[in-house]
Figure 1 (tube, rainbow, N blue to C red):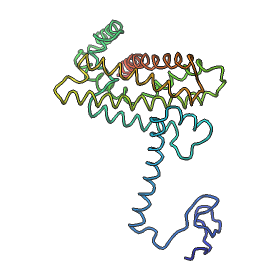
Figure 2 (cartoon, helix red, strand yellow; figure 1 turned 120 degrees about the vertical axis):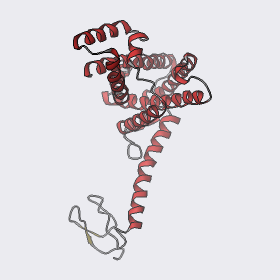
Figure 3 (tube, rainbow, N blue to C red; figure 1 turned 180 degrees about the vertical axis):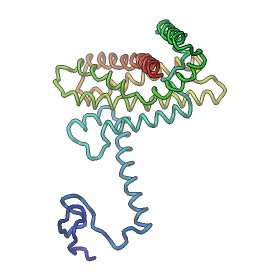
Length: 280
């Protein structure tokens, strides 16, 4: 088939001369199509395209805080993954890391009964249930612990939804669409998930070197402070490009948002306890 030979697009039925259909983007068939070499080439091209956008998005998000949010809001979207897709990919990676090295957001029933701020309430709720259905604590704990591990990994979007009202209130004078704040929060939580993955891997490295990993109060405290500080610095850097924030107000708002991230992790554990309790 010559370079300028006319062909009929199989998708829209229009006759074309160019390599691609200008109406639907379909590519003209070639003599080597459907060979193993062609299938391999197409697969590599598609994977490279997806990975290229993913890597470019992650690079921008991690190395230039707020720039990806600003680019999406002003319409530069073709070269990047959408914020929701990026969040779910980050969440999937976080789930894999948690599965491999241990959870940071899921607490077993024993922890809810004895170590959390709501332990008194949890004991009352669990005792009432056990008395009602005659189930033993050990039997219920086995069911609860399996369910809470699953819920904590799959319901991260709840934290995003709970966080969105904060920038809406803090930047209400900018009169931005709710979607703009949602994009900022999604990008922020992609960073948070990446940060948690790093923290989990550091804890696992400490464990492999003979320590206690996440079970060590010192390791837990150090990683918590590290995460909070890193989150605060990231938010401060992101508020410039994303919201044009400057001066002392930028510092204060960054501190408020960073504190809210930490508080929401505690609230998330409680929410996961309630969800798991009422669904098991």
